[in-house]
Amino acid sequence: MVRAPAGKAPGSPLWLKLSSYVTLTRDETAFLLELERCVARQPARADLLRQGDRYGEASVLRDGWAIRHKALPDGRRQVVNFVLPGDIIGIYSNLFECADHSVTTLTPVEVASFPPERIVALFRGFPRLAAALAWSGAREEAMVAERLLSLGRRTALERVAHLIVELLRRLSVVNMAQDGHFTLPVTQEIMADALGLSIVHVNRTLRRLRDSGLVEVSGQRLTVKDVSQLAVVGQFDELYLHLIRAPDQLERAFSDHQAKRRTILSTDPT
Image (cartoon, rainbow, N blue to C red):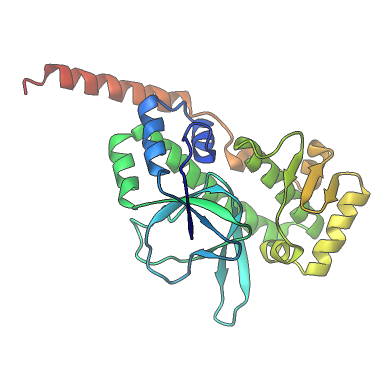
């Protein structure tokens, strides 16, 4: 593990991701900056979390790619989801003693680790930030449910198309995809483990998408030529990604809470 200097929270993937849901205040931004203060680098194929191990520190992925996966005793593996910059690893470490899945890096990564108690402090002191974090967790649950739908009902072509559009949407939120271009450091073996297909089937399906002019692949560089048509092929409905601002009623509730808190503080004789 190699230590690296911490960057600034504004513009970091986690800040970009959460601020896409709520407009973060200066204090909330400062808390995120402190949360990402202890930064380290890890190589590819490193386990950031092991299934069955006790939780240690939680961490934010700041750069690079990883996978969440579960394995059977005989070694067969299912990739549950892709961990992208801005995602938190071990967010439920305060609720459970042991990890129910593993997280392994696909590329060299940069992670910022912090004691899990900081999540408790976040919920106690920054309710708007806590709501944004809850939104992020709910979105990840929705992605797992969508992956289950793909495994159970979508065809191979639909699965691959759907996954590509999902990754494009997620990467766009953290400024890692522009004009349909993004880096996809995922082998066909990993993609097969994520989509419940054989490597041969993944290869054949990608070739079909290329031949149809929907995507272009050059090494790890992937370009979606026609996002709307690819979404049609994958039967992609981005509702499950919840790429929305916080509902007005939630913002009003926070405003009312802050006003009441100011009133209490102003009238407190102590």
